[in-house]
Length: 240
Image 1 (tube, rainbow, N blue to C red):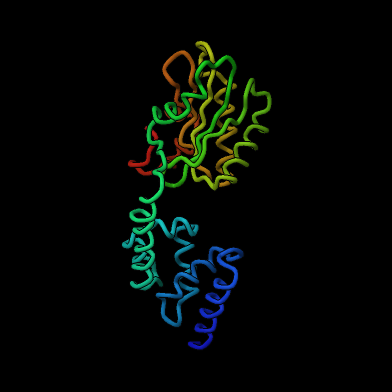
Image 2 (image 1 turned 180 degrees about the vertical axis):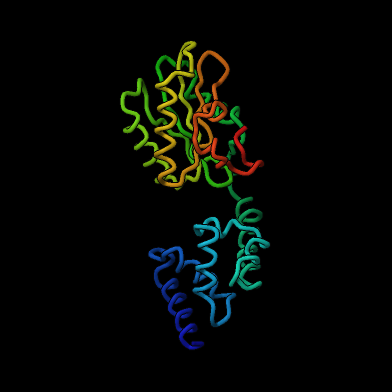
């Protein structure tokens, strides 16, 4: 058993040295990392336990040390190693690059897209794609003009989310004039977009409608089923 595990560790490291991380599955990538801290046996067990609890590799690397230690089958050294990588990313590495803008409230989303909303003459649907920390990955124009096919629009929104590896999104429907926001077609669009997003595990924080009145929040009005069911982000990350 010991020799077999050592051979597996050697194979993972030699493969990484030869071709980098490309081609590694999330499980293999995690096993490679754990191979520097997990003893001879338990490598696959620890990797499987972490991915089952945290769902994906990014979430494993973002977990705190107490969460990692409390995962059955994960040794203290492994938890400390992953925690150290997280702290390095947040402190030294992340601090060396540009700070990503965050969207934590409705006003943040509207401010971010102010230029796209300025001088609006027609209708637009925009999206702000976010990572797990509500940091902005990209802002995108999903559709310009009247929306005749919500399904086609939602398909494009999902494709862009996958491209940016987004974990959450805020949709903004910009409408000129003083159009009443609470109309069946707008509510149906919000729900179609949410259904498509949930199919790829993308959380819709809100569906805002901006016109010549106070911005209208689809989530606050109960349009989004996930919000009504309590599928919300932690308070510190919540969209107000």
